[in-house]
Amino acid sequence: MSSAFAYALVAALGNVIGALAVTRRAARELVLIEHFVAFGAGFMLAVALVELLPEAFARSGTAAPALVLAGYLAVHLTQHTLTPHFHFGEETHTVNRLAGTSALVGLLLHTFFDGVAIASAFLVRPSLGVLVFLAILLHKLPEGVTVSSLMLAGGRSAPQAIGAAALLGVATVAGVVFTDQIPFLVRHGLGLSAGVTIYVAASNLVPEFQGKRGWTLPGMFFAGAAAFYLTKLLLDELS
Image (tube, rainbow, N blue to C red):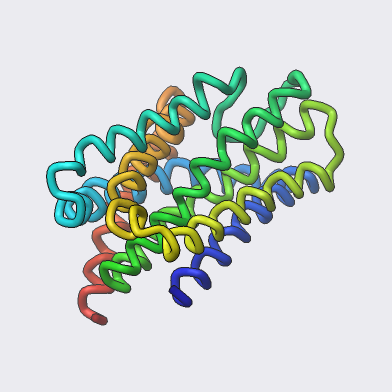
């Protein structure tokens, strides 16, 4: 629990760093974060398919497929059905004030399950916990960019934008805390988290770069998947 909590705190800081890049108009950092979207998508998808799904089936048995689907559908409901305006990355157009609030509410469920994923993975083994933490950390920066830029585009102040990103970090830490307290999440958290992670990687992050020209962003996507395997090999050697 203590290890998962510490890693969740570090991941939560990624939300705030992403927000600071937006509020300070740090152009270079925002370009770098765009590459994190592609790299993180490849890493997350690899972690979800190669690591989370098999462990979810081992822990939840025949309930695992339904749990994975439930996690996937829940994120789609909160981010793209109930939320009128949402996409990962910086928002550069003026939007309705409600758009920032609804995006924040939609992201809170997703970030809560980021914490559930970290805690559940550490319950299986530390190396899996580190892999899941890295996958989550990679998309925390663009997540902070997303919610803070929507807040600014809706007329909110910079402190409010940073505060919204910080709330996402709090939800991640809360996911770790509640996983330790709720037996259902101890047993089935990985299944739900796998569905959430697959959605974020394949349905949120990939569409953000797949239509853009050039080979840099697709290359970062494949590099993210390759980095997962290299990291896994390294962690297996150390454990």
